[in-house]
Length: 190
Image 1 (tube, one colour):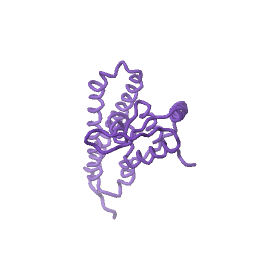
Image 2 (cartoon, helix red, strand yellow; image 1 turned 90 degrees about the vertical axis):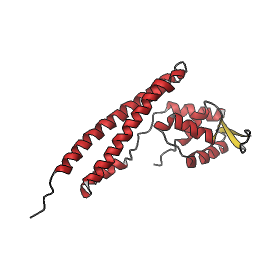
Image 3 (cartoon, helix red, strand yellow; image 1 turned 30 degrees about the horizontal axis):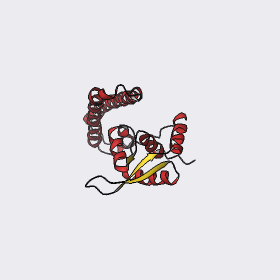
Image 4 (cartoon, helix red, strand yellow; image 1 turned 90 degrees about the horizontal axis):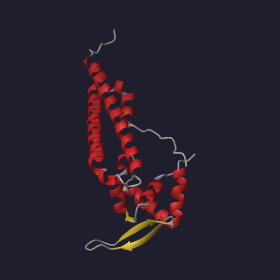
């Protein structure tokens, strides 16, 4: 069974805030849902075109001083109806694709130092993400506290912090294990 492409719902949800150009959508993704949902320019523009063709978004040309003409998209009544229907459905089960875990699965075939370095880099990235989430909670969220979306955004942030702290704990534990493996002498067969 083919999986439904949820990019359209991410775009409809963002356009439900306000009309935007594709570039503005990409910027908003980076500032908001980009911590847990990735959409590339290569995905955004073709999906916007399909949404417009299906009457789920409106499109108008706009020009800002000193910039080339762009298309600004807005959600249509039909698009809003589809978005709200999607919001009411149970989410699909996540599929996990984690290259680090895939490499660890086959790690016994390679050099433990390479795998140790990879997990240490992963650990560093988790620490950086935690700092970012803490900044969002302390600074970015302050002016949003009265917004009706705030409790939901705060729940997303809490999820991100919990998951990232768990990943960090796992990475630190794995680093300890890999260091022990690296210290073991290699024994040759008789």
